[in-house]
Amino acid sequence: MKLLVFCRLTFAACALSVAALSAQAQGSAKDFVIVKPDQLVWGDAPAGVKSAVLYGDPNKPGMYVVRNIFPAGIMSTPHFHTQDRYVTVIKGTWYAGTDASWDPATTVGLPAGSMMFHPAGAVHFDGAIKGDTEIQIIGMGPVSTTPVYPNEGRFGKPHKLN
Image (cartoon, rainbow, N blue to C red; front, top):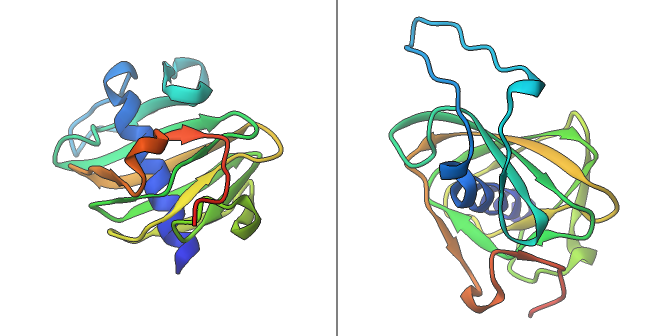
């Protein structure tokens, strides 16, 4: 349960921070939308995190799809989101914690191909520990992210906080 909360918050934080900077593919409900890797426009977030919106807009009603890349050693600080989110690991290993500790020793490693559900309101933290990691988040907007420790910033090198 704690792990799910952690991942959900991290992904929402990334998505919201760079959504305005990222390119997105749009279509009507009856159109096919194809986004190839070379079409992604990555925006920069704090601590070297990158984000791209593939579909929709996390700030508006409707489904959205976002990709985030976390550099090695960087995790989101503990947070939670207002909406459910589904996270799929694309490359690398994603480490997710489902509490407010920000202690990397409490995380679970999710290798590429893994999926994690983040329920709305569940506190979590997540990111990359040993190598750069790319994830994809699918959710319904509008979504917002609330930090547990606002003075810690959104991303950084994790260290036990409680």
